[in-house]
Image (cartoon, rainbow, N blue to C red):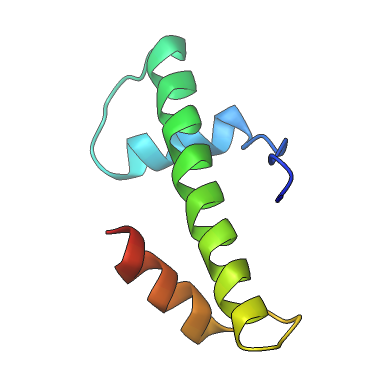
Length: 74
């Protein structure tokens, strides 16, 4: 069973992403909520890509695995 990811995105980076896409001000709660969403999404993609690589008999995740994982997750 895959382990749960414990990596946390830097909140300043997440806030900067929100600002780069048009937000003039961003609350701490919004930054944390968006960071949690991104962490959940990326963990699903990473897990799926890992499964695809393993299914193909590889240990290395490739760009193709990431692309296919994104499509499968939707």
